[in-house]
Image 1 (cartoon, rainbow, N blue to C red):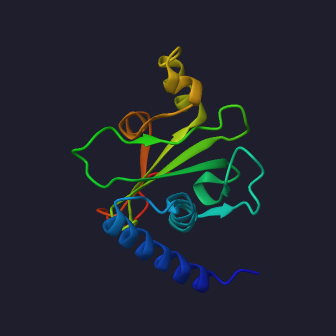
Image 2 (image 1 turned 30 degrees about the vertical axis):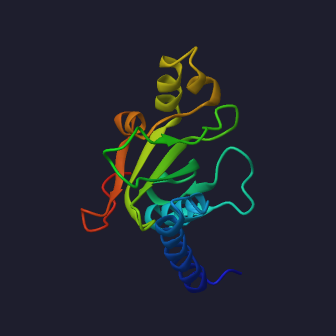
Amino acid sequence: MKNPFVVDKIIAEARRLAAEYRRTTGKSLGVSSEIAKHDACRLLDLEPCDPPPGGYDAIGRGPREGQRVQIKGRVVFDDRKGNPRIGQFKVDQDWDLVVLVVMDADFEPCAIYEAEREAVEEALAETAGSNRRKRGAMSVARFKRIARLAWSREDGGAAVGG
C-alpha cells in the first residue's frame, strides 16, 4: 500500500524540481499531469485508478460519488501571453466529468474547474471542422466558461462546488 505522506513529499519535490527546471532552461519537465492528478484526488476527494482503465483517471467520492473523472492539468506561467490549451480529451472513451487543475509557475494549484461530459462535448462540437475539434482539445479559457469552479486557493483552499 502507498504511504500518502511519502507520496506528498515526492510530489512536493517534483513541484520544486519542475519549477527550477523551467526557470533554468525555459522548458517544461513534463510532470504537470502527475502533479495535477495528485492534487485533484487530494483536494476533491477522488480515488485514483491504478492503473487508469482508459478514459478516466479517478472515481469520485462524496459529492462526486461514482463519477468517472478525467483529470487534466495546465501550468499557466503568464496570463498575458497566448491562449494556453488543455491536452486532448478522451472523447471516444468512458468518463463522466473532466477536472482541470490550473497551476502557477511553482506548480502549485491555483484553481480546479470541473465540467460534465455533455458540456465538454457541446463545446467541442461548436468547433467542428477545426483541427482542435479533431484532436479533442480546447483552450483553458473556453474550458473555464463551460465549467464550474470546484476548488480555489483564494477561498482558503475550500471546495467551492461539487
